[in-house]
Image (cartoon, rainbow, N blue to C red; front, top):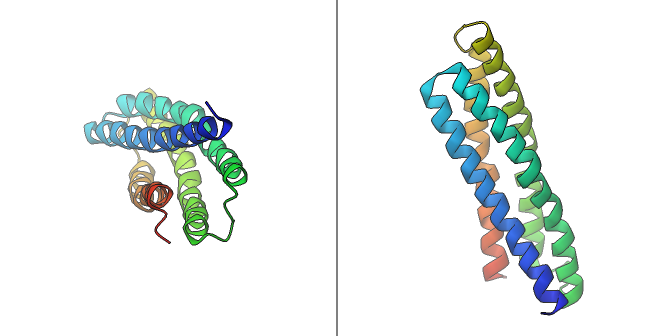
Length: 155
């Protein structure tokens, strides 16, 4: 096994973890939200926050490291258009992902408080959920486009 192959494997694995974690988190948060059960939402959001911290964050950190190493090992120029587009999309994904993490934390806290006080979920929770849902499209879409660019290198 060459160093290039090992780094490429880690890079692809990072992409899989980002997409898989994002998809799983979106699914579980949406399913919990649909119950309108504050306690269930609080427990689900607590796990989601942990998953984001462990899996998504580590993969998000790994991607530029392994990507930079792949560039060096393959003598790929930073001026390649597919790479520049990928980096721009990575920034877009980050601009939507970082706020989502904080939204998930606040939704978890609001749901916990509602459950502890045997209250309905507050309006702020629903505002955050709608924003969280909307932010998922450009964030996840940018990530999917990056994956396509990595594979196709169309320009």
